[in-house]
Length: 402
Ligand code: GLA
Image (cartoon, rainbow, N blue to C red; front, side, top):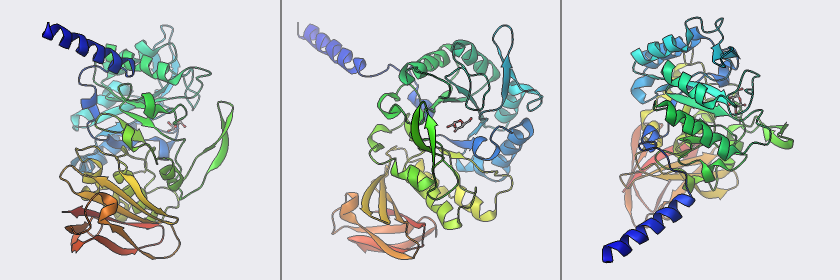
C-alpha cells in the first residue's frame, strides 16, 4: 500500500516535471558538459569558405596548441551547400569542397578533432542556399553519414514558424540519425530560447550577430520588426544580464562567436572580450583566421587559466555583481569554492577598480589568495577585497582562492 502511494506520487511528479520540459535522449547533456570550444568560419570568411581553409584550421589547431588548450570543433558555417538533387539530397558546392564533406570529416577526425556544419530551419539559409525545412530527417541522416559532430541551425526564411517546434523537430531528426551531434540553436534570442532550449539544443544564441567592434550596432529589419543587429561585444554583454540561471552543464547561453583578433579591436578590448566570454561560460568559438594570428592574439586565445574558468566543471555562468556605470565587476563561482572575477573598465581612462569579498559571496574577514590570470602570477593574499588599476576599455581578471 505504502509502495503503491509512493509510485503514484512519483508518477504525478514525473507528469508535472515533464509537462514543463522536453525529454532529451539519454546522454544528451553529456555531449556538452562544458561550453563547446572550437573555430567557426563565419566571422572571417563569410560565404567564401572552402576545403583548403578548413583543413588549414585543423592543422593549426594541432600545430599551434589550440587542440591542447581544449578547442575541438571546426565548424563550416553558411556557404558549403549549393542545391538539392532530384531525391532531395543536399548537394555540396564542389568548387569550394572538391573532396566532399565526408573526406573532410575523416581528415579532421584523423587529427583528433571534430567537424561542425551549418543549416537553417527555413527554406533557405541566411546566405541564400537551401535550408532544411521539409528535409530535416534526410539532412540529419546525411550529416550522420558524413561523420558530422556539430550542427549550427539558423533561423532565416522561417516565416511564422514556431521556433521551439522547428528546433525540436531537428533535434528529433538528429536523435533518429543515431550519431551524437552537438546541436547549436541559432535563432538570435528572438523567442527566448533560454526558456525552452534545454533538452532541445546544447547551446542557443541569445542575440543578433556580433561584429568586431566595441559598441557598434545597426538597425535592421528581422521578421518584420526593427531590431539592432551587427552589434559590438559590449552591447552583447549587456544583453546577457538575467540569463545566467538558464545555463548549466549540457545547455549554454551563446552570446555569439568570438571576434578576438578581428576588426579594429585593440589588444585591451580583445583581452576584455575573451575574459568576459570566459566568465559568461560562453561557448568559445574562435572567429579569426588563426593561421595568421599575431603572437599577442595567440596569447589571449590560448590562455589556459582563463579557459579553465570558462570550462570549470561546476558549469555556472558568471554574473555582474556591480555596475557603477563605466566600471563593472563580474564574478563566476568555480567548482573548488574559488571565484573568477573580471574587473571591467569601459571608460577611456585608466581606473582603479576593486571587488569586495561580500560581493562574491565571501565574508569580509576572509583572507584569500589572489592570482592574476593575465599576468599569470600570484599577486598576494588579501582580506575583504582586491583592487587594481584597470586599463581603458580593458580588464583585470583574477582568481580568488579562500
Ligand atoms: C546568421 C547567423 C550568423 C551566420 C549567418 C550565415 O546571420 O546569425 O552567425 O551563421 O547567418 O549566413
